[in-house]
Amino acid sequence: MEYRLLGSSGCAVSALALGTLTFGNETDQDASFAQLDRFTEAGGTLVDSADVYADGRSEEIIGRWLAARPGRRQSVVLATKGRFPTDDTPNGHGLSRQHLALALNASLRRLGTETIDLYQVHGWDPLTRIEETLRFLDDAVRAGKINYAGLSNFTGWQVQKAVDTAAARGLSAPVSLQPQYNLLARAIEWEIVPACQDAGLGLLAWSPLASGWLTGKYRRGEPPAPGTRVVENADEGMRIWNQRGQSEQTWQVLDAVRKVAEGRGVSLAQVAIAWVLGRPAVSSVILGARSLEQFTDNLAAAGLQLSSEEMQLLDEASKPPAPDYPYGEPGQSQRSRRIQGGRF
Image (tube, rainbow, N blue to C red; front, top):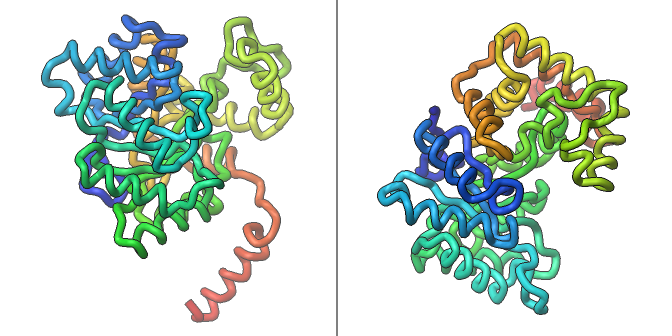
């Protein structure tokens, strides 16, 4: 297992992380324990959860696993999140001090630990000033309840505002951002990745397999098979199926992933994960699987190093279409002319 620093912090994390969204829902406690055991035995350290995963059951399962494995807590970098509704009261959601205080204490209780290593705000809150959120996180660091603060699902300007506000107020700065990132979702490269690179935030990429699309289980011109998430999630699943399935680039990406996988004798999933591992600013890639078999296959991506030719093939197949000004070709060509003219 490779280890990388969590952004500009001094905390080392495994390049692959165990995501626990399925724990307590699609994955029962025994199967969850098996994934946690397999992960840590392979040298994995970063375990990621959230208070809303399975209504708190995910955190509870992790807490019971830690209690049943004396000594494991020291080697695990424990991450969780707060922001979304945990009850139906007016302060039962958001990034206010009121809600986060309740959410953090509840997560600490469910996880059975005195300190959460990485506490992430699960999304932007337009109703709460970012200074209030950051001051709460800074107080939590000073109180020893968390070691580091992180962000999740923020846009580029939101990342920059959080970082700048923390610097201006002398508060603990966030060290990471958790965004969706995969070969079918590269839009973060236009604004979010550069913002994180500039601010020294490490990316914790979730959904590296694009909800199963990059495993090759969906085929052009064929309806999704029973038991897949597209079918089980009904309306939302079919919306994504129609959106991605009708895109020619989706199938071009899958063809490229399949070509690399067949050439290496590995699964499509391992190739897709290895591609994300090779992207700039990525500290760790979050794996989430229903079964131990799926998780074991995904975990094997830790030993897969793609060549520059393979990365280029995947890059070109998955290159996102240029958005409108100022991100498209005009802006790029202007920058190129300025560089050539010696003005940079």
